[in-house]
Structure formats: C-alpha cells, structure tokens
Amino acid sequence: VQLQACGGGLVQTGGSLRLSCAPYGFNLENYIVAWFRQAPGKEREGISSTSRSGPPYYVDSVKGRFTISKDNNKNMVYLQMNSLKPDDTAVYYCAAREIGTDARLFDPRAFSKWGQGTLVTVSS
Image (tube, rainbow, N blue to C red; front, side, top):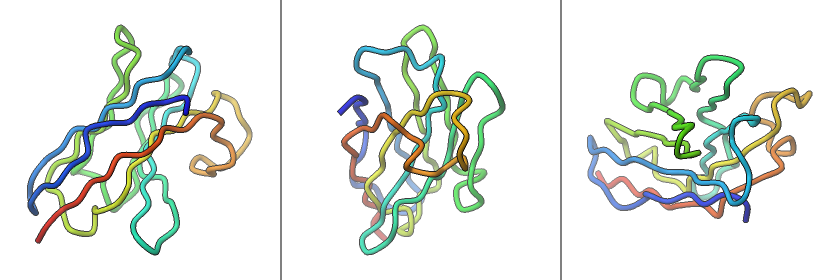
C-alpha cells in the first residue's frame, strides 16, 4: 500500500463526504492522481483525476457533484463529494501514475501506486 485513502462512511442521499489521499514516502507533484471506485458486482472505474499538467477531469456521472483538489503543501489529494446518490455506493480508491505514462487516463494497469480503499455507502 503506497497511498492511504480515508474519509468514507455512511451518508444519506443528498449528503456529502470528503475523501483524503496521502502518499507514503513520495511526492505527488510528479504524478497523476486519480480516484477510482468499485461498486458491488461491477468493475473498478476511474471517476476523477488531477495533475500539474492539466485541469481536473471528471466522468459524467460525478461531474458537478464531485470536486478533486490537491494541496501541494500537505502533499494530499482530496475528493469532495456532494449530492451523493445510492449509485455512488462503492469502495473508493486513490491511485497515482507518473506523468507521461503512455496509457488511457483511467487504465488501472498504468497506475503503479494504490491505496487500500475506503467504503462509501449512500442510503436512500
């Protein structure tokens, strides 16, 4: 485990959570950091990413509700999740890949560093 993700929990529909991602022993400055999630019975999907080389990216299902941010001083990445829905229920992972890696943005194989996941449960 090279990243630690935390901040998950149980929240009602419409509620908010903020996830945090902290690296162990490396600086996130030279990495693309992404949040993935995996719902029960579904494949892991990338939902948002940030890096120093471009603007934040969001998939359509979370755009306008989730905000990814990076604190360079603290070497942390956050995912603010608002207006949560039951469909957002999943284990959320943060992951990092070196900038310049030649692969599709959310190809999990391109990410060399992963966190252990944090569970987000949204009740209806």
